[in-house]
Image 1 (cartoon, rainbow, N blue to C red):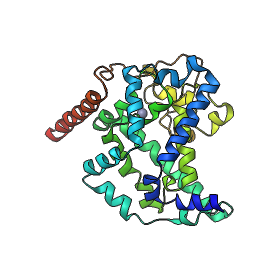
Image 2 (cartoon, rainbow, N blue to C red):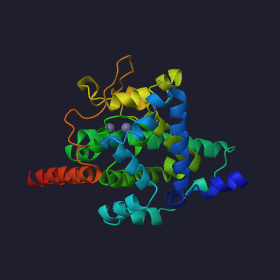
Image 3 (cartoon, rainbow, N blue to C red):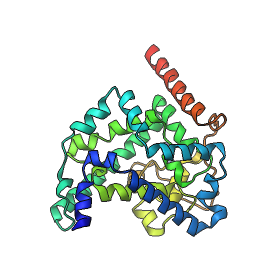
Image 4 (cartoon, rainbow, N blue to C red):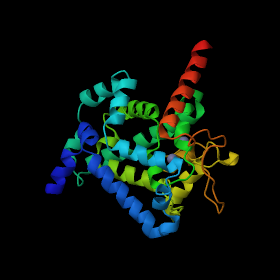
Length: 288
Ligand SMILES: [Zn+2]
Ligand SMILES: [Zn+2]
């Protein structure tokens, strides 16, 4: 009953945002430990992180920032208050009455999860296709080595856009996978795994159901043939359905940007660089 109460208490949108810090720390440390146990120290994410190279330094800073409300504050400012309005005025939903044994609820959760993932596939594709959005998302791709903490590598302007987009499922179907605590934990863990140093393709699960680390690594590839592939976040079938799937092979994947101007002058310089790239692009769009 206590676990049930815990899930219910943590299933509302606002509590996910305010009381998620402990969960984030626990999941992140667990995935880092799995990565270490599977690969050993020499090939682990922890070794990359503690190399303190500029790229992994930024990942570490962004992880620490994710535990604070700094990003949330910036998201409110740069969305002109919209994020605050959505978080505080979105009505709580049926996850409050979450019952694992109720078929109707389970079906609802499945639909919510699928719709959310479908929309996230398209947001991600949009961030690659539209120049002005790419200026924000390029920062995620500027990671020179994938490690568990590279998952946190998102500029606060991109986080603001993503936060606003994450409300679309709520507007469409009255719910979002982010508002259901166990689903949010599962999504979060899978996405941390995808950025780990483990390059597994997860066998049949990775082939037919979930995006494996090997598939997401191709998305981060510097190689031209891999550009605009594997946009999916959790389920693999969107990429297969919309023709953007690239299957993992035996190649060694070199990750990063072909012309990487990041990771030279430190975290703050990179944050500023994204901001100037974005505003320059915005000016171009306005002039046209
Ligand atoms: Zn991407
Ligand atoms: Zn990624």
